[in-house]
Amino acid sequence: DGPDDAPLLVLAPTLGATWHMWDRQIPELTRTRRVLRFDLPGQGGAPPHPATSVADLAERLLTTLDSLGETRFGYAGCGLGGAVGLQLALSAPHRLTALALVSTSPRPGTPDEWRQRGVVIRTNGLDAIARSTPDRWFTPAFAAAQSAISSWAVQMVGSTAPGCYIAACEANASFDVRGRLNAIGVPTLVVCGAEDQTAPPADA
Image (tube, rainbow, N blue to C red; front, side, top):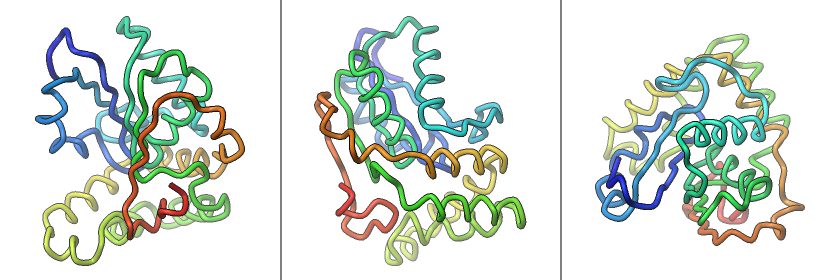
């Protein structure tokens, strides 16, 4: 989306979401940017080719951008998409012009929490995880006032390929760059919500 001659901004979704999570931001962003959105493996329209590490996701994105002839870009990601941004800032900083991290942690939760989520999905499927999505993504007041968005979130997560969701849980479980943050020199904006329990303000 956006003018062909504008600087490129790449937008990455969180685990379980599709590129449509950014729909409401597109009119504003495309005033000054050319925006590329993508889906994580098995989410939305992306093929179900699991990626078990954040580094793999980052490398796949760079390969895609290379195929499009894009060498430099700004990047904004949420959750797992933000972790990919952190990885890019560490492994390919020459490619980034700027970085924005939304609800992102240098170590998201604990490995046991993510692996347990994978066990739940293997045993019972994605239904329970999908139904609990509004509790993780939204405050109770927002979920009550925006029931259509809450229902959309449940549907979006529920449509994710289970094997790819489990692989993404493994990627989150093994991701920890807390000791490398001081190596990031890319101009970075960190955005967090006061009531965010997944990536709380302390993580920011």
